[in-house]
Image: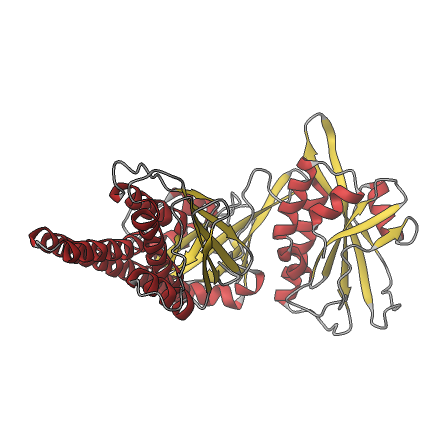
Length: 494
């Protein structure tokens, strides 16, 4: 499905500033849909002036929908939807008197012009029209809660038409902000509660409130519950009194409540505010548990890295005492293998999840290989391409594979001569292709990967084929040298 930006750039005259305003509106208009018990469709005039195109749509979570199918991308000619034309031409909210039965259910239509404040334009700039459609099939005598919702929706609609909602300069509201159904308070101009939904009242009961909220000044009530004799946080008073469009959290007696204030500014003056309430106690507890688990996992990786470095140091010390060259070389190879694993655990000890940027690991492994090459050989390996982020289950064996292949190329491919050694990486959606290429002396004539007695190649084959479920091939390089190609499947989500 095309996005709002795609449709706007392709079919309308909206510029980047207009689109930013539209995105801010759409990111927060679930609030208007839920308060209205209605579907919202955003229509923007076509570039050629012949009609309208629907660029965004929102269904209510508080009532039945009118549109069971998506209407985004639908084009309506001028005159086909008279209420949209009227709202646009007369710059006012238009309401239809009688319900529309054309869809088989009674639907009340309303259109709201979308205005953006603009410098140098006293009336602002009008960008489109919101069509608000209410399914009346389950209509009944509204309760006090529903009447408050509808009045609040009417005020918000007027703010949209006046260019006062969304709030200019404010960051888009996050998905985890309180919603209408979580709990709602309506405040008057002085910050006193005129209506409290059952969920909002329950949240304040859990904070320790014993009295009624209606008629109380929300700022002082909240401060007295959460601060006692301590100095009051001024930002809390601003949010709880509804004077600014902000969010905050308050905590008392082990309960954590999130508040979001929405000042209601109609006709140039503040008439009150809406405060959305959400009890986030359990959510924050789980977040703290996850943070503790993440810290524990990182500490484990850190300790594993330290232990591996200790093992490597012991092996290195033992190698220095050996007088047999073959034994010393075997221990030095073991040191490098352990070191490659330690690099992965060191990276994981700094990562918040079990994923690592493998480019950093690869560069460090490549650097280690360059350091142990013979000075007269002058082989400097380099990486071409990007590995990207990989899960630890792939990163650890891949680091060992890379260490073995590079070390093998330096030791057996070049010996006393200089040359080029490259690690060429190509990453697809669900696979990783790595080519280790050198222009050294090449493979023996009778070389066979399946029957090779080399411990390093046996390790590589076991890790690539057995652990990573990948493919491995070693072939002569055109022009001389050796090419080792491996393909490893990777999860599409990484």
